[in-house]
Image 1 (cartoon, rainbow, N blue to C red):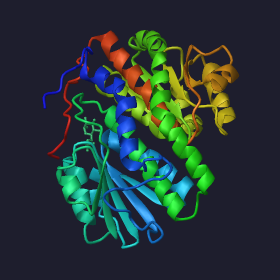
Image 2: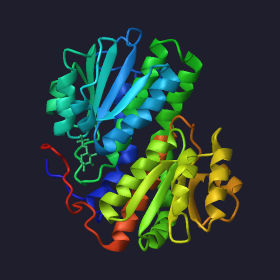
Image 3: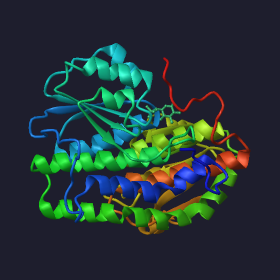
Length: 367
Ligand code: G6P
């Protein structure tokens, strides 16, 4: 079927706006009718026998894998390796039967990811994939393919596929955690009910749009930007930097907040915007001290947090964006929104080709 922009100026804007609905579709697919349990319609891996997981992908899908590492390790107690597909395939790492190899790809056709999958066939105990295109090569060649059900994604920079990948990966990690006796029924049901509420929360979060536009206007004049995040927000910072590079052509890099002192602090001056992604969680105090270190050197901070975090940060920041409260476990899905909108509005302010950025392809099917 032909896909149009449904009144939006760009496919990217349409796909950002679709997220509450497609996240809802993915949740419906993987939850029982009463919403209280997770079902994997294609079959459930035996998580009690899996010793470790190996997650492999490219681009935005790779950052979904990095996020999932925190979930599988913290919730399910499963050790996880995460690799960029082009590195994995030529490094030829040892892969044993105790390993479940998991490949994440929107298109299901990325050449390096497919080659990495083929390398794992016959070596890993199981080959799983999280894909948007169910009839793709990666889906067909997996033992179990989990669809993300995001619908056609046209914008080259991935948006709704990313949040749907995260949703499915979180459900998989929760399923593993439950099977391995790492999460009790009460906590599982609490997280599932918060997940069911996520599409509505995401909708409310769309109200940040005018604030993001204001920040983007300033950001569009920058030469370079630095994204910082800790824990589950670290992969999100990487994704925010990637989005900005891809569509606004502003150089951006991301660092784990704790690494600030080990290099990037040397770059801080009045001209380098620093975007901090940090819900007010257990590690927020540490992030506040990182922000103070930046501001003491004249650095301009854009803080993306919740109301508590924004209040705790004081009024010395350049700008703040306030998202609704959400359980820290679910935060990466919600915090993808400001990362996407910031890149989008910056690109629009600069007048770049948002849906077809120069030199990039939607699907990289050759090396
Ligand atoms: C390209 C796209 C990215 C995407 C990456 C991986 O670089 O521009 O948006 O994240 O490929 O694609 P895949 O289809 O494997 O998720």
